[in-house]
Image (cartoon, rainbow, N blue to C red; front, top):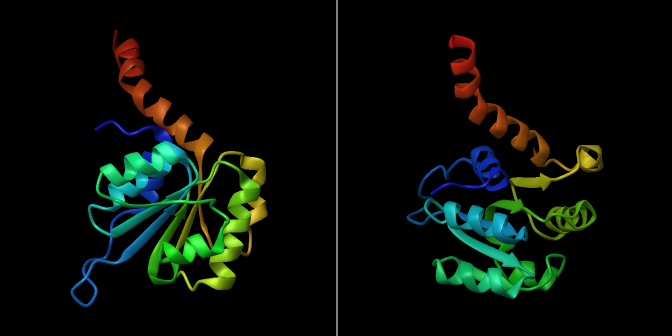
Length: 163
């Protein structure tokens, strides 16, 4: 499967679970991000007990059809995060496109849930500083796009240089 740059970049940062914990897989929750979030949740479900929470009904339904626990709700709904077992998650990926919503979700995760690892998607490099001091790992989407384009163009550049 070819993954788009955002999903692949988040997946590369997240990696995979450290293995079974007391006979069960660790819990991961992906919050928002539309199809990017769905792709990340689907990938994580291979090694984690993954769930997806999102506000787009069609994406949530597709995620459920792929065998991932899926919850239709607003990303900033604390009750929905609780229903999606955020408390039991060893990893939460906040893939929401909007930095302000991401900040609210991270604040909820840090104040109401004891999530050990939070990875966030940021689409605007100027907003990265907003997350300083929140103990999160940041995936900056424009950097992923530049890296992906450079990687795909490298063989062509080598041919031109050799040719």
